[in-house]
Image (cartoon, rainbow, N blue to C red):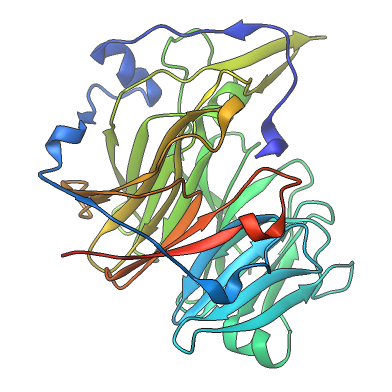
Length: 361
């Protein structure tokens, strides 16, 4: 997240907004608004520790479940990726060397699940991405796809469409759309979805819109689900119909951010008083799960997390109240939540843990 946090001098504090101003996030007339009371079922969950990974993590930044393999990216370990076989309850080790080689990464920040057997990681220093099949990675360590990243962009999401040989991605510095698709044969780039707008209507600068539009994204090829970090918003994009559904929840608070203009260049970033909304999002065959821990930048590990569950039309289903702060997560067949709990940089590795929640249906 530090890739888009900029030290600045002017604090823009935005006041509570009305329904009309809310619509300015994307220029539409109305949004579906939900509160916690709209979720008829609320379940409190207690966690167990996934002991097999304890002590192995240094600075984990993302986690995904691929089949029965739990894949965790770690930007400070000797290897870029940790893998756990949850079926056998066995830690399989670290993978993807640190370096400049064709199948190595120097400073990866992005881990995106592309299918039940593939994932993509990005290298923000060497400006490249690598796609791995989990089974090939375990046996040969080789990637199945690689490519360059635009030098001017900082992508945080990738998805490879094998049928179309195209790459879908989102980044911090894109100019028009929240989601882009690049045809890897022709190089043609298409865009979907408008960037969010400042709800106050004071600025339509691309940097402001990109800042508000930073989201965690999950996909299953038919749908893309967005959970926004600085906006109280969850969205689902129907890839076939090219249609988007949006909900605001649960508190409908305005984003706060710093803005500074120097030499006619606008810099935008989060300050210590900025509020973080959603931490992560994932999808099963039946439901969308959005992880939420509303907190201030200056107190990142405060409070306990909750998980909002929706159907694919964003109708509210239930809330899971967790017993601790969880930063990243994934769900196994609507039966188990795997939650990654991280401490601040410099903390001991034994404080970086994975917790298990058995869901009550």
